Image (tube, rainbow, N blue to C red; front, side, top):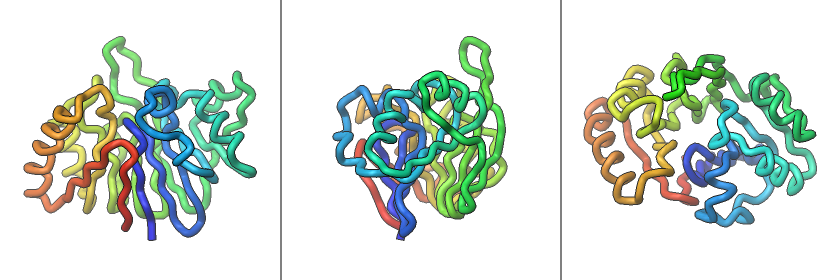
Length: 209
């Protein structure tokens, strides 16, 4: 059994028989107070898709490392360089049960387009980071739904092109609860016609496969 829990924004935990993986420990989860951090428990590894602060806050990474006895951090080189400045070791390798695609972040308003690493864990869930460029997905896709670098329309088309069985909406912290619900309802209407189930999770909520 695999349990997927959404903390906030793009930060997820994935727990199976081998332990817990945490995706994208960004400042929204660490600083907002929306989730009891102690409820995260110990994690065995941390996967970070790219260098933006809403996906990696070094203080959050250190907090997670301090809570575990053997926590490993996986990231691309840009993130590893940032963490190294804070005395945190990260490897650019990937675990045996994880695959990755190195793509580019979508262009943000200031014109930047940093590197981005999409991860798939054990053939169960894919986290694309902030990119529409990944070419494969597991049965579950973490899907950014309303973002500064894209649109709900493009996100829905991205999901349809990959064809997961389910999507878990992410990257919408700056919306109200009713705003998130409205965007999710739009995605459900379109993706449902394509045979893709939308599984919305509020802060701290989880479901199991």
